[in-house]
Image 1: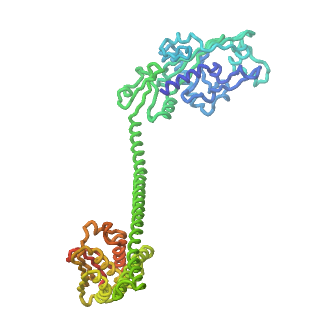
Image 2: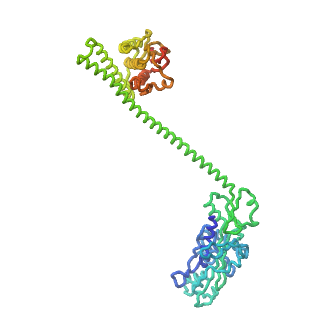
Image 3: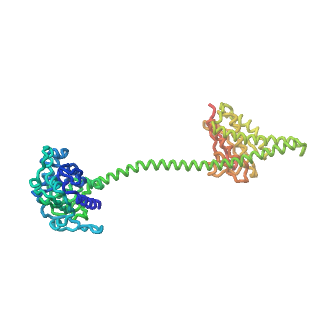
Length: 545
């Protein structure tokens, strides 16, 4: 786990730390100054690692000290943490016996050879202290300064120029030969400090003037903070030794989990996940709700936009098909009357055909011209309606008289085509309407009646005018083939023609324009069954008051 590798790296790093860093002041033998010089220890302000609560040292006389506090020279103590460090120093001195005693060691790493992994073994403390990990040589002057750094500093301060002899301060005779210091590697062990089991690393330093014990404390508070930064479970995290010190509640509680630390024999990472699990569940629910709150509207909007895009594409494709069909139908619809006009016009101009049938030829020309005029009128009318609407001038008038006059104008070409036209017009049916719009509506309805009944044996069309409830009605019924129910839902839409390729020519604009004109007069155009067997269009107009 991450904690195991971190502790292993931490111990390796501290193994290489010089022994003289563990005091408040020290002389750096590797410095540029060849004379007397004293510097604050790098451990006087910071431990150098978030897991280490404090470093400490026990000299040959049994006096325990920590680098942040200099009891003799108070100006070198860390004033920002003086209260906290003083309390920690008092606790360590109270536990000195357990720190230095044989105790139960946690584990020891055998020396690595050829990059082989460390082998962890629990062995007595005395046997662990035999092999040194550092063997360093110092000059007499350098060692003497580190043996009594406070005295050196006070001597430098006094400007006396006289350094205390090593025999008095360090217990060392002046000598020219190098002084050897052996530093052993750190071992882990458990210690009770302030009634809490802590993890401590201890090493022995052998000097000519006595042995030192140095160590560092892995604080419970520091462990919890370190673990909280790396774990979702941030409540009640600690590192405990498996002994009778563990409280029964820590073992029996189902919310408490103990995970062994491989690098530390008999040590466990204790996690109370009950509160943390509840907090995690609440956070997960909150995240889920936030996700749904954000994702839901986004998905709905995306779906709506996708639907609109699909509808737009479908509408564009439909319009493209309708334009193609319209172009083909318009060409056919315009070519037919133009061909008739040219044929009969040439016959009259060149004196061809039956000379006694000139009136008949003229009638054909008139009929074809009217047909051509209706096609052009429908196209222009629908275009005008889609752009800005058709301007109508509605007024109260006799619907009976207007309908009769319009039908009589249309009757000749219908009867010539073989249609039987019947009128059933009630008297005195008044309405509010535009006479030109009424003419265009009836023209389209009667033209459709003639066009789609050509295959019938009996071709009849009946125009009726009658009063309704607050309405004036014009019914145009024919004997044609009629329309199926599904077709009736589409018949008033532009370009909708429910005939096969062999059916009558047309653009599919007449009924759409007729309904639009009816509704612009505050009326409507609807479809119902015909008593003649075909269909019946009913024009509704507001009755005159």
